[in-house]
Each structure stands twice: as structure tokens, then as C-alpha cells.
Length: 381
Ligand code: GAL
Image 1 (cartoon, helix red, strand yellow):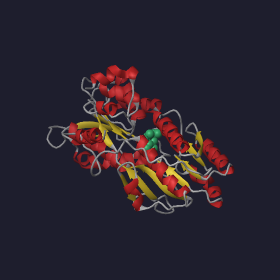
Image 2: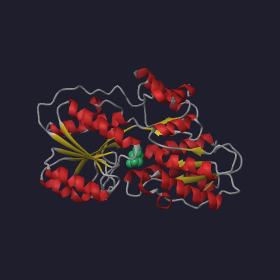
Image 3: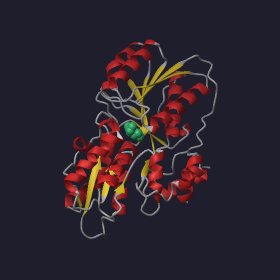
Image 4: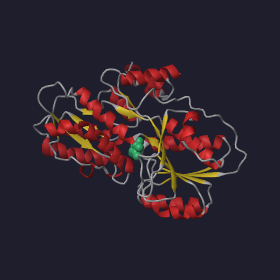
């Protein structure tokens, strides 16, 4: 299994497919040793929404992990509604949970009720998305968010052969939700990678939407991404070729590919990036409707979160040395994520690129089991 995963990483890094970070892809045979806890502790997990595939996977996996070693779990989803999530957090605090693990709907809003957690000495860990402006937060578990954008930018650079191809290319950016701190990192990771080409005119953003604020997509919703892309196509691409769209994640990429299907009359294949490896997007990659996704092994992210939380619950203080025993490739970072109050100790996992050429390996490694999708998997070999 390890070898196959390593192959996935090396395929991702070969040729025009670029992986970020050093070394191999995340370990997937995570299985942290399953020592049953003799405590009767309860973890409160607050997830943003069930509308997106990934948060369902994260939530289920985390719940199972914690329960398998004897912890109780209260898992909440908040319909992407920051006020609802704050109520969920309040009730978790009033239940006297022993630890809060939060993937915030909105990184600023989520801070509002955390003083209560601090008063009760309930440790707060940010999952995937940073929580801003609170000193109640101690740890942050995520992927290297800038690297995600960088991988998307490099993919476009390589596939348009920007250093050698003649003429110019037209590109658009589609960002994530403005309340999600990660979304800014994804955008700047991609934009900065391509900035020199934009400056030199090799890449042209015909819409002029060249900042995160101009391209943010409310709630990361496919419908919103579709609507925004349709108006961009109507306004700027009726007679012009569009060459690439950097979509921050898979839900926005879905909306963009639908908009292209309904409104774009050019005959070229438009490069579309994504992030997450959602099922529908993997199908689109096989069908040629999306070019790549930045794959994040969510089981690994959850497994790392689990190990960090478990150490806290056992009275430990997770630090750099924990990295060696973590079931994935992780960097311990204390100088990248400042939440406005302090630098947050972060455990950052490595993302990597999945395309039609290496997607099959996700199945071979057991990361995906899609009996009903067999035709896609077979056609990807
Ligand atoms: C981000 C997360 C991504 C993506 C997005 C949409 O914060 O890192 O993986 O899922 O939210 O929910």
C-alpha cells in the first residue's frame, strides 16, 4: 500500500504535474494505535455544512475515530450558517465537553463564543480553517493552504506552457467564501505563482477580476460559482477564447464547468482546476470536463486531528516531536498562521495533484470505493 501511495506522489510530480512540499504523499494506512481510553470524555465537533461532500467525510471519520477509543462525540453541522454554528458551539460549551474541534463556517464569527470555552478551560482546536481573533485557540490542523493554490497555478503554467508557447492566454479566477480564512491563501497561492505572467501580459484576465474580493464565491456554492461564471462569459467571452479558470475547490469547479457547458461556445478545452477530490469532480476529470483537483487525504487530516486532540485530552502539550508519531506527512509550523492575537501552533499536511493520469490510483489504494462508478474508474486506467 505504501508503495502505491508513493507511486501516486511520484506520478503527481512527474512531467507537468507538480506536487508541493518535500517528500512523499501522505501516508494513508493511518491507523493510529487504537488504545482504548479509560476516560469518559466527550469531544464536541462543530462542522460547517453537510452540503459539501468533504465535511460529511471529515465528520464521520472523526466521530468513528474518537468513538473507537472510547470517547463520546457530539457532532454538529451548521448549514454554512455562522450564527447557527455559534449556537452549536454555545450548547457544546454548556454540555461541558472536554475539547472543542471546530471547522469554522466563518473564521471571524466563530471566535465570538469562545471566551466561554476559555473560562471553562475547554481546549479549542481549529480544524482545517483558522479561527481568527481569539486567544482561546491553541492548535490548528490543516493542509498547507498556500501550497494548494500554488499547485493549481503551477498546473496552469505547465499545461499552457507559459514559458514557451507564443501569444497570450486568457485566464479567470474563481475564489472561495470570503469568511473562510483558507480561501485567501488558496487565491494568493495561485495568483502569486502566475503574477509575473499576468504582469507581462502573457496571461490576461479579461474580466479584470484580479483580487480575492472580486472573485470570492458565497458559501463556496456551485450555483453561485455558476452564476458568476455565466456573467463573466456573457460579458467577456462571447468572441474570445477562455483558456483557463483557476477554481479554488471542487464545488466551485462544478459550477464553472456547468457554466461553460451552457454558455461557452469556444472549441478549445478550458483548463479547470479544483480541490478536494469530490466524487462528481473525479467523474468530470475522467470525462474531460475538469483538468485536475488538489487532493487532500481527509482521513489523514482527521487522523492527525485525532492524535493532537488525544494528546491534549491525556494532559499532554502537543509540540514538534509529535510529528514523528503522526500517521501522515506533516509539518509542525509556529510562524505561518497568525490569527490576529497570536501565532497558532499548526500541524500542516501535504496536498498533491490528481489528474486523469493518476486518479485510478486513488481507487487502487482503497481511498475510494465506487462500485457504481466502475465505468469511470476503468476508463481512467
Ligand atoms: C476550505 C477547505 C477546502 C474546501 C472548502 C469548501 O476551507 O480547506 O478543502 O472544502 O473549504 O468547503
